[in-house]
Structures are given as structure tokens and as C-alpha cells.
Amino acid sequence: MSEVLQRLAQILEQRKQEPADKSYTASLYAKGIDSILKKVGEEATETVIAAKNGDKQQIIYETADLWFHCMVMLAHQGLHPDDVLQELQRRFGLSGLEEKAQRNG
Image 1 (spheres, rainbow, N blue to C red):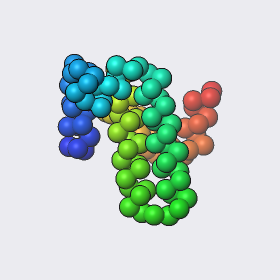
Image 2 (cartoon, helix red, strand yellow):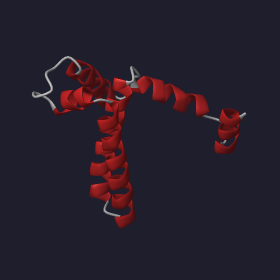
Image 3 (cartoon, one colour):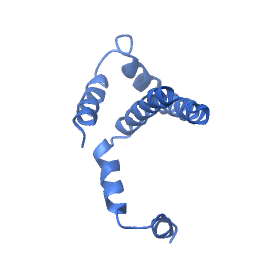
């Protein structure tokens, strides 16, 4: 995994132990899964709009926000970015159609 993702995953785990008034991430954890998912949805929408507008810097910025909030969601669920990367690795060599059929089968 990327060094950046690894370090961020460690920080997100640490934030679970911090007071909600000292950290944005800790405040998200304290508010619970509904608030975390709301942020994921908001950031996904902002990413789509940035892509539609074609502003490359805004796409990067919004995608970073989306990835961050997805990582918060993963950590809240007891998952790690490595879990997602392993799934992507598993899909190498499969067509998207084959992979989807395996999930639905």
C-alpha cells in the first residue's frame, strides 16, 4: 500500500481515541456511521460535479476528500485500506463482466 495511505490509516485509528472537540475525524467517529456516510455521499457528489466541470485541480481536491472520508468509514467499520486493495488485486485478470457475475452468482 502507498506510504500515504498507510500513514493516514494509522492516524485515523489514533483519532478514534481522541476527544471529539480536538479533531474533525474524532468528531465524525463520535457522531456515528450516519454522519460518516453523509460525508461520503457529499464528497462523492462534489467529485462527480468536479469531473463534470472538467477542472483537473478540483477533481484531485474532491477525490482526495472522497478517499479520506471513505477511509474514515472503513476504519469505523473495523476495516483497513489493505482490505480494499486486496479486493482490487483479486480482480486483476477478470473482466468487469466476469467479476460482477461472480458476485451475483
